[in-house]
Image 1 (tube, one colour):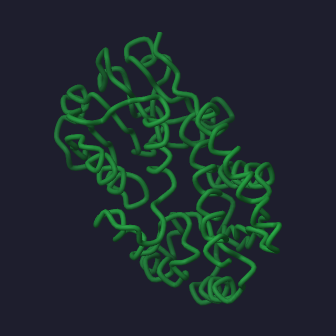
Image 2 (cartoon, one colour):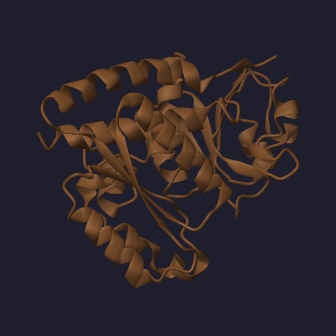
Length: 285
């Protein structure tokens, strides 16, 4: 049986530290507040929203939600972002992506409308530039940052290891590659045009799956001794709940360690997100 890399063990330490920081800020009259912008009712977005709201309440961070219909216009969405930018009581913003199809062509413009100081989920160009340049500019995307927190907590040294990432999005894949390289791993990124992906992933010491495709990571992709970080949160109709990319019952008996879904990266991601909000709030004092 593989060792389960449980998010709850990582978040316990993070939460205790954040609770203390929030109390200090409130004593100074600052109430850290997260603004959540959601377009539509995607099940995976709703699941993450519930988790983020619950974690914020636990730590003492306020949450203000801006829920818009799936057919919202670009102009209406930009107006909401502008209002948030001008609201000094909101310190950080989580906006769910991808946006609906009719906004896809404008997603970069919409994301970059947000004040980088409030971009606690790393969706603006400035925040991403910080990750790729290795500089403290904005905030790193929360999901890949959560992957690094898990590796650090469980004492998994990346130096000299072969790391393979499935997925090249700016939300997870590309920043995760930069973060792993910063930890001295040798990184390969697989994507939809990669030939014979299983032959590449079997070479990995650390395998990060961020494809976002339910049951796409099968036993053909892994070998004994690997660390598997399953990033994705997919809706599984058969189970009536969320699941990762991994066919868990196939992979778990083979690999050395694996993050479960739910209970793995997602729970740590929300703590990282709330931590960025607290950091942003502290910067206003």
